[in-house]
Image 1 (tube, rainbow, N blue to C red):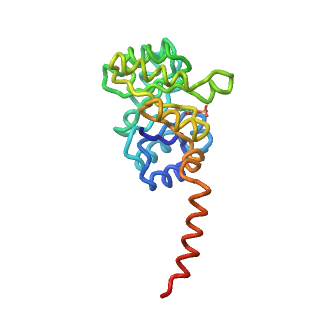
Image 2 (cartoon, rainbow, N blue to C red):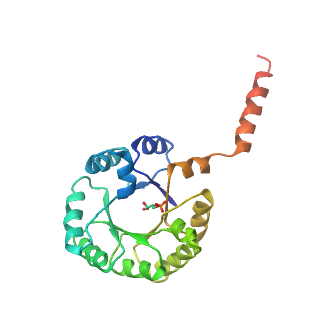
Image 3 (cartoon, protein in one colour):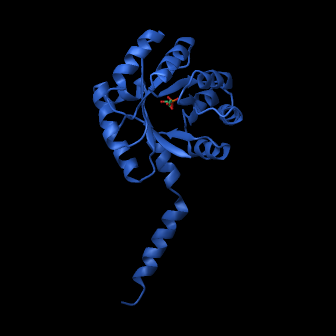
Length: 214
Ligand code: E4P
């Protein structure tokens, strides 16, 4: 399973990328606003750090506006993927962009029927938000399992990005469900790498190493 980083923080992206485990990055307007920097400048810098798909989201609500924004954003770097909201207008824009060979990530997806429509419209990626579903008492991972079945059954080229990931179990379950990608906040990635027994083991080995006669 590929791992994308779900952040617009370039320090975090640089650090995680140095671990050799980052395949791409997803941003959204909220994540970019948090950085207090120019939108395009942040996206450009991320593209220089990570050699993989970098999602940048449009803010228009009509298809024409989305397509116009997408054409501009895609000029920033060849790896930019356009995040399009899952609405009828978003589907129209996705189809137009597919025909222009511009990659899309259909976002704010909360049901498997939305996944089906996004895939049919030619989305490169589709992003079900599992944490937000869990928050309101629905099992987000169910949508991921259904999504994997739908995409495999009908041999769609669309890849699922598990989004709105809140903890390492979300990542583990995504991998077990056969998701193509999980996009994870840096904090979750750090939690995935750590284990208290690893830390205890290292301390013990280092102490014992000192006892070896020189
Ligand atoms: C994914 O593409 C989104 O940017 C992100 O996962 C949303 O996560 P949130 O529900 O924690 O805001």
